[in-house]
Image 1 (cartoon, rainbow, N blue to C red):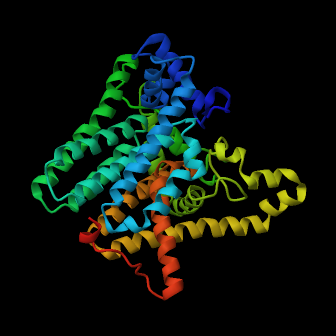
Image 2: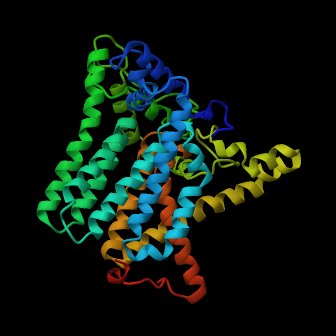
Image 3: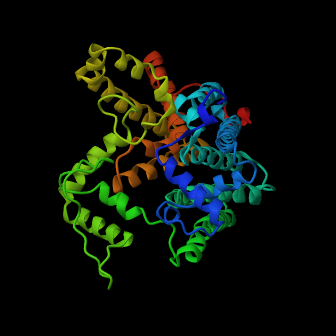
Length: 419
C-alpha cells in the first residue's frame, strides 16, 4: 500500500465513481451530476464520507478501510466456522480466503467488489453464529446485523437486493422456529430495504426521478444480440427497441423489457449466449479464455504468467495457444468441479452443514444467473469469491479423501464436541 502511487488504484469503473465523488464534493448529497444517476450512487457516497476525514489522503483511506474490513470479515467468518465441526479445516480455509492475491489486492481498488465480498463473509458468519448458538438472547441483534450488511451491499450494488432476499429466505426456511422465521424475513428485508429507498429518495430530489440507477437496460443490451457472444465487447446489431413514450426516447426500462422479450422470442440464441456467458463468468483473469473487465486487477502487475508471456514471443504463443487454451479449460472446469464437490458434500451431511452449504452457494448462484441476464464478465464473480474459495477448499479435501481412502467422508468431530 505504501509503495503504490496514491496508495491505491482505480478499478474497472474507478473514474466513474471518482467523478461521482467530485459531484458530491461540489454540490453535496443531492448532487445532480449525471453519473450519479447512471451508476448507483451508494459507493461514491461512501467515498464522499471518507473525504470528510481527509481529501488529500483519500485513496489511502479507501485502501485502509477496505483492507481492514476484508481482514476482519475473513477472521469473523473463520471464527464462526470454528463453532462447527469444520474447525479442523479452519487454517487452510482462512489462508486461502485471506491471502488470495486477487481478493487481498482488490481491497486497494476503487471499486465495490471487495467491500461486497466482505459483506458476504460477515452475513454468512452472522447466520452461522445464529444457527450454532444454543441461546436466543442475541437473535434480534444477529438478525439486524445481517440486515445491516445486506443493506450496505445493496447500497453499493443494487443487484444485491435479490441476493439478500434469497439468503434471508434460505435462512428462514432452514430455521424451525416460526417466530424466528417471521423475524428473519421481516427484519432482514426491512433493514436491507432502507438502502435502495435512500438511493431512490436521493435521486428523486436530485433528478426528479424515482430510480436507483439507469444502467441495467444498457448492460443487458450489451450482452444480447444475434451476432455477439455475450461479453463486454458487443459485436453486431443491437436488440431492436422502440419507445412507448411521447418523447420517442428509449428509456432504460424500455431497453430492459426489449431484451427480455428478445430472449423469450429467440430461445436458441438465448442458449448460445448463456453458454458463452457461463464460460466468461468462470474464466481466468489472464490467458486465451479470459473475458471480462479485470484488466486493472492489481494481481496482473506481478502475475508470473503475465510476465512470462511478455518476456518472449514463444512464451506468449505457448500461453495463448492450444496449450494455454487446454490449461485454461482445465482451470475453469476444475474450479467448478471443486466448488460443486464441496457444496454437495456439505448438503449430503445434512443439519448445519447443509445450511452452510446452501447459504454459501446462494450468492454465487444468484451472481451467476444475473450474469446470464446481463453480460458474461469474470469480474462479476469477485464479490462472491471468498464463498466459492471456501467451497473449493472443502471440495479439494473431499477429492483428496476420495483418492486416498476411497471414501467421500473426511473424519470430523461431532457437532457437540466441536462446540
